[in-house]
Length: 169
Image (cartoon, rainbow, N blue to C red):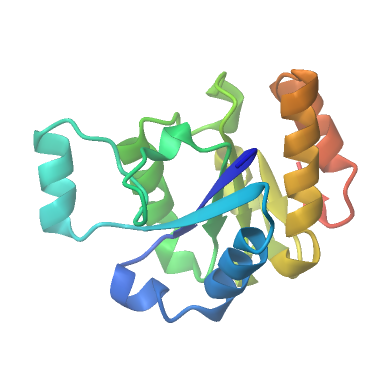
């Protein structure tokens, strides 16, 4: 795959697997030959403790690939009570909380029902999709794909994402 997405639901597996938006995006991305989507959920307290104890990064469900190895972390914003779980995910993945402090190319993009007011969490995301993700996910993938091929750095990628309708950077 040329572009790898980790789709993250910031709650337990038992809650996130029932989320239709996550399943729709997973299907859209994996239906394209050059794209790959895997899933990740916030681990329960016992697993979080084990990850920390053994200094293991949070990983995807399908391949157990560390989240920091993906091109895009797509985090669902389903309700405000899970906002602190987003910080847990970033911390366990070894990714700085604030977008301004990130120098690696992994992009953190949010979206979902709580994304219509992005400012409370904007500092933690490189971009936030306003509206339905399935309307823009392939455009985002193409921006990332083109940026990788051209060897673009984070500022140029963010500028291209900002040019997409419904993407807040």
